[in-house]
Length: 130
Image (cartoon, rainbow, N blue to C red; front, side, top):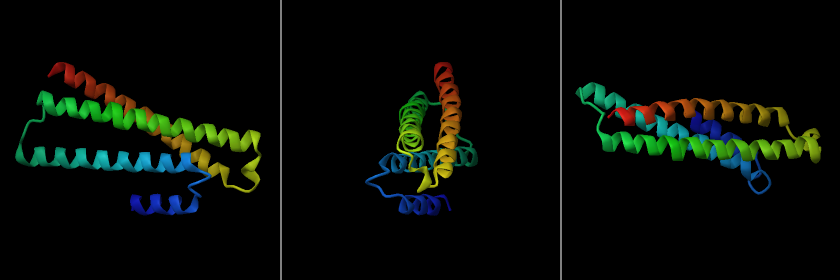
């Protein structure tokens, strides 16, 4: 279902003009895949009664959370917010575009980044305790 939403929004945007919004969509799509992969790994570990507190595995999770999720999500949200401000305030494109939908998606991206930051911080402390 999320994949279909991403494809619909991506088709709605002209990729040449609104590249930063496509970057935001791709970033959030990768976030969904990363989270789904970790959920599957957690489910497998619970089913097999395995412990995931291996230092190598936890290091992989920390690097994935910090580099992939946190930095990529922040970069995508900031670039999208910058372009949204440019379109709304400077170029006055909001008469032709549904700017409120873009602003809501950017707000949700920053909220997602905040939650990813908390998750990354927790993973860092788990790594320190292993």
